Structure formats: structure tokens, C-alpha cells
Amino acid sequence: MSTLISADLERINHFEWRVKRLENFIGKSDENNIIGIINDLNEKLIQCASSNMHAIALLKQADTINRIISSDFQSRLLKDRSVKLELILADEERIRGVTKILSEIDASAHVLDGEYFQEIPNLFKTLNKLLTIHHDIKYQHSEFTQELSKFLRDYAAFTLMMDENLQQYKTILRKNQQEISTIEDNPIE
Image (cartoon, rainbow, N blue to C red; front, top):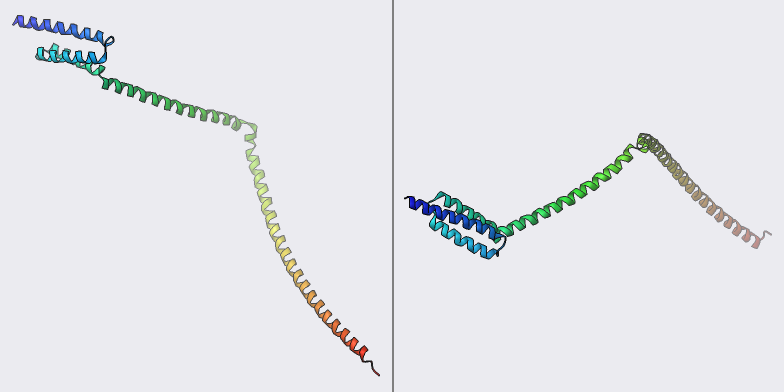
């Protein structure tokens, strides 16, 4: 039994050495070659040390290494990085917008603190007075317009009456002229 344990320990030590060597190879070898080596190592480890807890830990470590160097993990990592970059750029744009708005608010704050801003209540009082005057003028204009309209109606009626009187006068005048001319043509004997 002790020989069996010592043989298992030798195998475990050998596997640990191979895992460390594999970890050193990761930065120096082709990715496909490393994946193949790790897959072979996984198969051999499963066959030789499935009952030993230490060997199982080594298998888990080898699986972790295999997962980390897999192309899916690398592409997902790159996607995560690109998403993070997009989020950072979008956040930077939002920060620029907020900074611009804050600078506009700061510029407006100087106006609100100025002496002109304190004159606003007086301006409103003056505006109210002007509105009252405008309303009075508008009312007076309305009255004047009504008086003018009445005057123009009366004037139109007067001119119409004068026109009728002139027409009657002309008619009477013509009649008289005709009578005079007939009298002149037929003098009284």
C-alpha cells in the first residue's frame, strides 16, 4: 500500500511539475498548441488520479488554465473590454454635457447676483403701470372710435339729405326755367 501511495505521490509531483511548466509555456507558445497540451494533460490526469483529492485539485487548476486560454474566453474578455470602453466613452460624453450645463449655470449665477437683477421688481411695477395706461388708452380709443363712427353716420345722413335737397332744388329750378322759357315764347298780349 505504501508503494502505491509513493507511486501516486510521484505521479502527483510529476503532474504539478507539468502544470507549472505548462503555465510557463502559456506566454511563449501558440494558443492552439497550448490548448492541445492542456487537453492531453487533462485526459492523463483524469485517468491516473481520479481517486486522489490532490490530483483532483490539479485537474481543476488545469481546467481553469484551459478555460482562461480558450479563444471563447479571450473573445468574451475582449468584448467585455470593448463594452467597458464604450461605457467609459458614453459616460465621458455625459460628463462633458453636465460640465457644459454647470458652466452655463455658473455664468447665469453672475447675472442673478448683479445689480440689474435687483431692479426686476421695479421693472414689474413700471410694467404694471404701463399696462394700466395701455388699457386706459385702449378704452379711450374705443370710445373715440364709437364717437367718430356716430359722427360719420350723422355726416353721411346729412350729406345724403343735402344731396336729396340739391336734387329737388335742381328739379324745381329746371321746372322754373322751362316755365320761364315757355312764358318767353308765349308772351302775354
